[in-house]
Length: 307
Image (cartoon, helix red, strand yellow):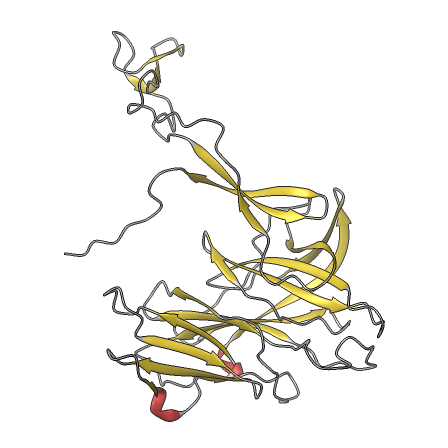
């Protein structure tokens, strides 16, 4: 059973847990102050994972939790398995597996169905700029009537048995996941690892690779299943913090557009991002090397007003 805990009242202690089982059920549990657990949602599962043919999908991978932009939590998980004898053997018609982003709305009915979710789709697979890429749709979610999104792990009508057995991560507003597709050799446990970068709120593509601008996934490499998305933060080129560190000045421009130290006589226009400080790259580890997909300030990333 996969389990993840959350602190929903922001008191520093986990009070809610989500667990997925081999029957495809996602359970919500309440954590008491003494650490005891009890089923929430009137003892009913928050969600039951089923494919398009209404057949249950196993949940064996990890679970990630993030705040929803309206209220409550988004719960991220996928389906598929790779632990039994024969799981790496070729199957003529494998079950389609799915990755889900489900909204646990405290003001909702408590139970979410697949029909309550906005589907996203994998349109096709191409080679662009040296990368094996997959296009992903970017359909909006109507939060007045829908409770999240899902992505079937099939490229168009082609289903090769791709599955989610890893642990998702939410970074910079994106759900970042790795999937595994067995190469179909009973004597070889290896396969393809695809890395998806999806908008955490909608499930839409959010990977800026290739010239088409349609990519949502890239082939990360082949071999054993990837346990977690390979994300790295590279050291910044400089630790200089403008206006803070000695000799690290906030830069501006004079009336002629020439660079100058802000505050000096005649230098009264700030250069854009002059006080941004050092920056670090956030990248994905691919078989071809590290590919940057975002940049972070070295300082405070976020905060919450407590009073």
